[in-house]
Length: 164
Image (cartoon, rainbow, N blue to C red; front, side):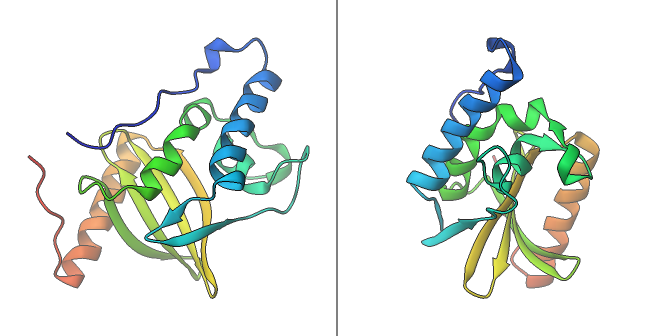
C-alpha cells in the first residue's frame, strides 16, 4: 500500500503569500522545533542561521528556491509538500529509495519518495544529522536520482527490492 502522506497545503487556498508562509511555518514549527523528527532514532538538527523574519534557514530552504539566499522566491510545489517531510523521514516504508552521496565534500543521506517525486536530504555532521532540504523533483532529475541510488546499492551489493 505504501506510506500515507498528509494532504498538500494548497497555495490557492490562501489570500496572500504572507498567509501561506505563516501557515507553512506553523507546520514547520510543530514538526521540526516542538516535536523534532528522528531518522533511525537519530534526532535531526536544523540549520538555524541566518534567521530571516524570525524563521530558521532550513524553513526557507524547504519553501523557496534560488541561488542567492537573500532573494529566494516561494517554490509552490516544494512548499505545498511541507507536511510530507516528517512522515517520510520517520517512515520505515520499503518503497522509499534511500542512499548516501557526497556533494561538495558534504556527506548526505537521500530519501526519495519515487511515486510522489519528492526528495529529502539529510546532511551528516560529526555529532549527528542535519535536516538540510526537501523538494519536488521533475522527471528528468528523478531519473538521475534513481540511477544514483541504483549505482550506490549495486556498489554495496544490496540492490533495492523490486516493488510490486
